Length: 400
Ligand code: BMA
Image (cartoon, rainbow, N blue to C red; front, side):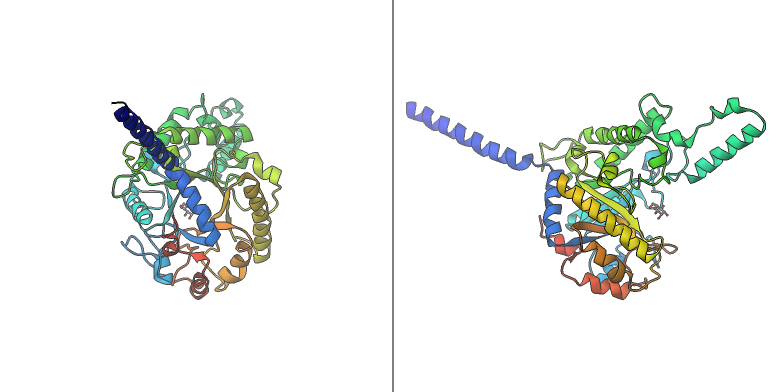
């Protein structure tokens, strides 16, 4: 009898031990695993990313199974970018015409081929109903104020919604608070539908409130205070993170969206940051895992190179001190006027820093930034893509 009890006790202890090992193993959430994977990938090189890659290119649109990247270099981008602009209103297409159902399918395909998914969001203005871009709103507001002043109706000015108050008005107690909560629900509802073929939630990088050091979006530098920006970021993140994920058979302990989202923070090219300045609106180490920036060449080549270099130096130093990854979250030269741009201008700067990925924006007929056989930069890009440390999806597939 005693021996039987002893055996039973041993069996229980052993099972508990194995059980706890399994628990420790699965205790890493899919988001944490993705971060670990990104760290490993970064040691091998930098990934190519592209916005809206499977939906349209320079000379085609809305055709299935096409990709400007694949048609040029024979492989898909390692990172694919998608946007949620429009989901907040319940639209079925995003602001660039991409059906959300189709995007969901491409997100699944990209995940299942071993690639990485990053999602941005250009929501409308929740106070005014206009676009994410603030310029037209501020112009209209200023014109209305001038007109009212001319007829001496200063009393009415306070009653017009000032676009500069958008962030303030979506915080608790603000006019657009309820509306913004609904918008967050719609974003979370869509994120919850991102499942693999087995029904498991797909981990993604989410990158809201980008380019916030500029003042062209309603969440920009001059449109809210530092304090408001932090409250706004935190409210957005806390809402989404807390949403419960149901079908998670592979990861039973990963029960909310927090476990499936890698948060990315990406201001715009600035050129003269100090670390202290950069950190003022940084959401914090417990809130962000990938820091980066959006850096297009709009001006001269010399300015671009020196600004990019200066920014990457600052960002790299911050990333090293804070244990973060860095990425060029948007980049490129509009409509590729210079056939040698990638390797001559961009690459030498990028290669000085531990960039995990670089993601040129979308390619469509009027406007393009990414690689394509239809761009003047095709040969230059193709040559660069042949370099061992420039990674496309097949190069990262095996890195788990
Ligand atoms: C901008 C432009 C716009 C587009 C937006 C969101 O940079 O490309 O045309 O609507 O990004 O993708």
